[in-house]
Image 1 (cartoon, rainbow, N blue to C red):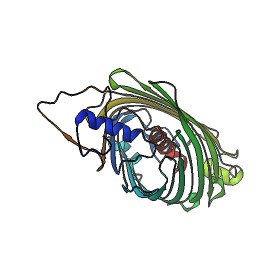
Image 2: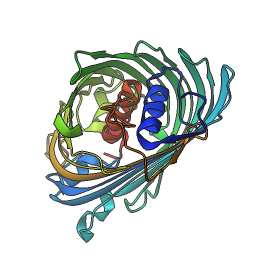
Image 3: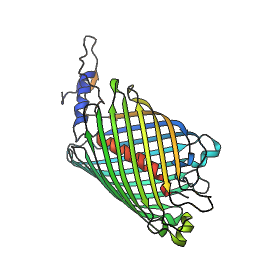
Length: 365
């Protein structure tokens, strides 16, 4: 079967499952699109121009695109390139200033197969609909990521993020470790611990923080799935406070934030490459940086209900071509091509969602 050029559909599913189950396997070409539409109780909570005050509730649309190409080489060194885009928009005219486009590109090199080390450069550009802040920031980042066949992942990166507001421009250092723990055939647990330190041009904007992220993946009957995630983060601004802190955040105390995020997603059985589902997201931040006059309040809470549609497509030139025969009786192997989830991919997906939700910590407040 591994050397087959052609195979019946159920045999091809076995081939793909064996490929995907191998720790060193990577599809040469992968594309994922996530579209979501729904309702938010606080439109500013998911915007990089931020929640210094609560905004009105309203409908929200979101589109995430993630594509990657990995050179299909047999050796231990494989070049790769990845591109991502996140678009968030609000149909209501009064809320459109909270919309944004976040673009990123990531060329790199992968070393190893069962245990992989990825060294990459990531460029990032964020464009905002906030009047006067269309070009919000750009970032240039070097990063390293280690993955093992046992489900362990470690990552670290350093970057320079250049804001339109020069005082917020900063050098960033972040990293973390995580892993997956399959409990049984229907339940897997994921856990990640991360840290970050930002050294800004303006001292009050220096920031240090981190925290845990845990998730549970539940496989339900007929290929339905449930994913629940919870994260908490503490951020301190060590050089805020005093007169400069008052100008920056409206308080003479050193700013300190506690942010908690929860997401629950239910996915129906896939229909070919398409998955439909719905999600409930809750975000809450408690901050001691509140202006005495009450014009700014860095605390916020948001509930978000979303309907989701996901399309995943991979191209693997090594896979056998599916063939049909009118006399063929299909064999039921009890599997499908995409039944086994890539746990490290799930960890990266959760980290990307958490990073996107954290955009407001870098905003014009």
